[in-house]
Every structure is written in structure tokens, then in C-alpha cells.
Image 1 (cartoon, rainbow, N blue to C red):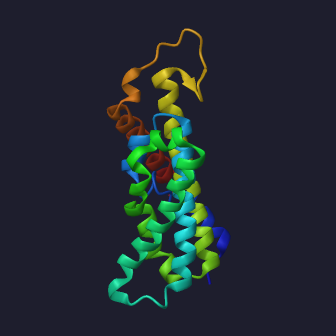
Image 2: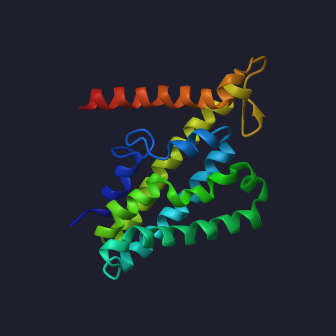
Image 3: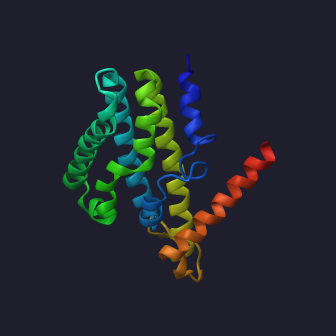
Length: 197
């Protein structure tokens, strides 16, 4: 029997979706231009992970093996639709900023991977903790990348100027800057992981 706390913490450190498993890089590259976008995408992805993991863990024995992936996608798409409608109603500016990347959560490797590899084989309780841990790990990575890019690309964090006289590095706000920041952070985390081993 798995330990729910271990399921939670592995998503943050040992199996971090972004820095260890290198999953979900497309939305990470695209939406990490500001901390607000990073938080918004993190909340949306965690909501979808949590809802889909719960439902899939509940119905796993009812789904025929050969149609399990399409069934998982329908469950995931339901939660994506719910979060997108909520964002349109309560945070239209954030919904516009995240654009197509909210609907694309349906096929996000993190969400589909956790449905297939974990929720379909484990209890509801462990699936909840797995979803929360993976969502937290993805969120921490996304907010860290967003904060670095926003600070270096504009000199601000959450719209507040951080350093007087700071000359922004506009390239960091571009897609190439996202690749650079993510690459350096991946290298750092791999170095840290290697030192621990």
C-alpha cells in the first residue's frame, strides 16, 4: 500500500513534471511570461489533474481496456471545459492571456500520464495526493520560470518594479528566452540530483 504523503511529495521533488520528467514543456514555454499567467495555468492544470484522477480512480474497473485512453480523454476534457468556463466567467483577462493553452490541457502529458500511469491503477485517496503533488510540482516550476522571465524580461514581478535603473533583457520575454531559462533550470536540477545520488 502506498503512502499518500509520499505520493504528494514525489510530484514536487523526485518526479517533478517539469524539471525531472520534462513534461508539459509546451504550455510552460508559452505562458511563463508573467507570474500571474504561471499561477493561472498552475491552478487550471491542478484542478484538471485532481478532478480527472478522482473520476478515473473511481471508474477504472468499469472501463474496457481497449477504450481506456479515449475514456480518460473524455473525463479530462470535462474538467478542462469546467475550468475554462470558470475562467471565462471570473477571470476573462487571464483566460485571454492563457489562450489556447487551457483547452490543450486535455492532451497535456502530465494529465494524461497521471491518468494512465497512476489513477487507473491506484486508490482514490492516493490518486488525490498524486494529483495534488504533481499539480504543486508543475505549479512551482511554472511560477519559478515565470518569475525569472518576468523579472529579467521587464524588471518587474506582478507589475511592481523591483530594481531602480534595471535594464530589462527583452529576449528573456521571448520564446527563445523561455528555452534558455528552462534549459538552465533543468541543468541546475540535474546537477543537484546528481550530487544527491
